[in-house]
Image (tube, rainbow, N blue to C red; front, top):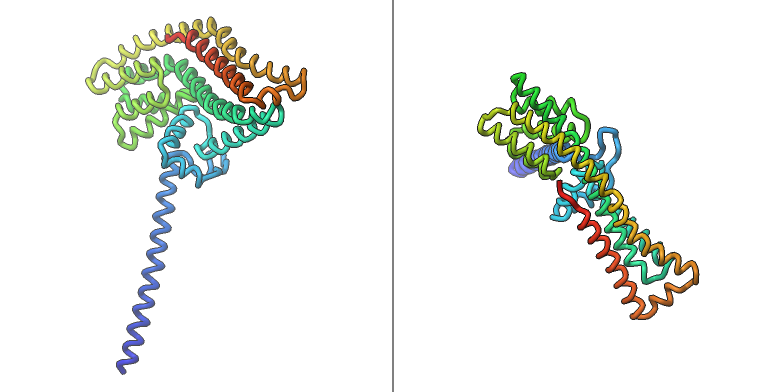
Length: 314
């Protein structure tokens, strides 16, 4: 009798343990799925985009986001507006570095493989900077219209939060997308100062800083938002025209800064084409390698000096 009772008790305990284990696994899987869905929604880096494009290298992407460099890369990619995750960009950059490394070794000489690889990494970073700057310029050109819409909405009696949401719907990208992010943050409980401050960090410019400061101070102190935005609209229009004139005047200098290093690289191909194997013999000795490194350094210094001297902050 006692044996039967012990067997029944053991069997019941085992079944109860199995049921609890299944329930625990199901609860864990459900919670993990909900957490991943929330992360995908907030970071806009889910498995697919709105168009259904599959995300690649998700494991590498998660590892990169845990590092400081990966988080900086994610912020820079967000500022460019590109539909690329940090993992995808990192893999593409490695592929470009490897391709240019092999191309430099095959086309010129084995010595030029590492410099060509470094050139690939530099080109990838410069591409991000170019995309970011282009988006910032486009955003700055939309600032007068944005200020005008906000002024009209606040003059009609709408709250500043509602006016920002209205401007996000009416404006095209990138201003519409960025204001949409601000409106979403405000809807989730973020303060006006934090949401607009994050916008200024993503797309840094003097014009945007002035607009953000005006909106934050007016919202905090309850000042005349309409009159401030009206005056700011005229100022932004004038700065827009000034920036366009300065950019037109400096276009030739900008092209010169890129032409100088291009001539140096072109001379290497010309030298190797005139006499086959000349570069390999030249870089076969320490003196030749040192001469090439010094030449590359001088071309880089010339590029930086031209860019620095032609930089005019408006």
